[in-house]
Image (cartoon, rainbow, N blue to C red; front, top):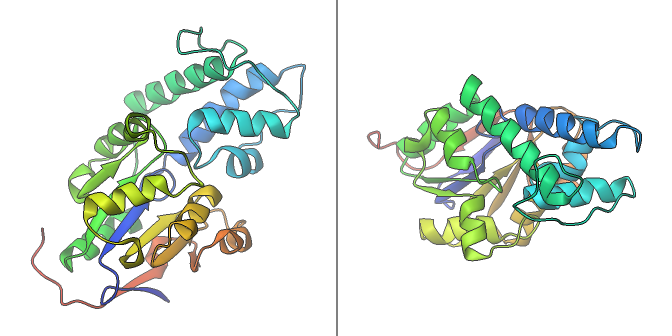
Length: 249
């Protein structure tokens, strides 16, 4: 079993969607709804597995739209935040997806992965600091809806990225900002990611360990090529070693 060695690693930084919360499928479904309406008569429908994982997952929303449309040979005007949701612009598609995702989260709530929650509890019991990050502006809404916000010392999300001018993944800026707030050098921190751009960001950031999570069972080789030191199908397969457990924080 793969292990986190807390004798040399002091903090763990988790991606949100698909790692902490089971919201990747909600994102993917929202993207499919929006893209399929736009693509009708232009191209084949959006594939919730291949297209989402390869072109959208882990990227800021606008970057995901540009990357996916480029894969179909489609270029759209950028538009702006005042566009009508669903308008044939990058911002128009972004606004439509955002509204649909927020409505689904608000109405249906968010489920967390039990194995991730158990791992975070164990890490904190051993005195390890934890952070959660996301390219999404709704990270706090999602993690709060799952009832987990108290388990993380630091939250860095799309709102922070916009305010600080941080580039999106695969640039490591999001993870580096989390490490800075945790007051831990990247070499002593772990990145846990399920998306290829996020794994690449962890590698480029010089983190002490990059853990790839392959819940679909289809990305292990790609996650390793992107820079994952360890790939697991679920965080229940990740053991924790080192440090004597302390009282719950």
